[in-house]
Image (tube, helix red, strand yellow):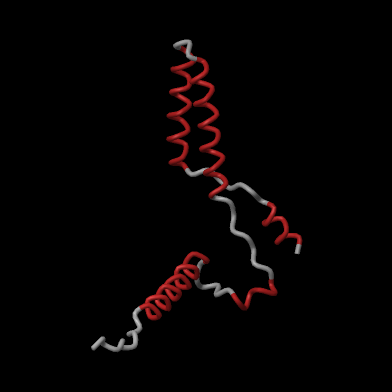
Length: 110
């Protein structure tokens, strides 16, 4: 039980290697601006680089563990994204079927 609780409390995960390219570029530009006496822009770029890294870490956080009581509703062979996609496709099919029903013929005016 404590393992499930610990995994839920994790809010951030690892930062992708490609994210470091963007963060490094922003930090290099911040150094250039700071060296050319435009300190305000350099500080903004440092903050933006931090936000990019923080957002990427948040996106890559570990998945939430499903409680044992709800295991029967989740198919472990499929990801949540796949299950959501299939549910949306079923909803779209139902809407299309409902919208494409032929309407009753209207009486023609004489």
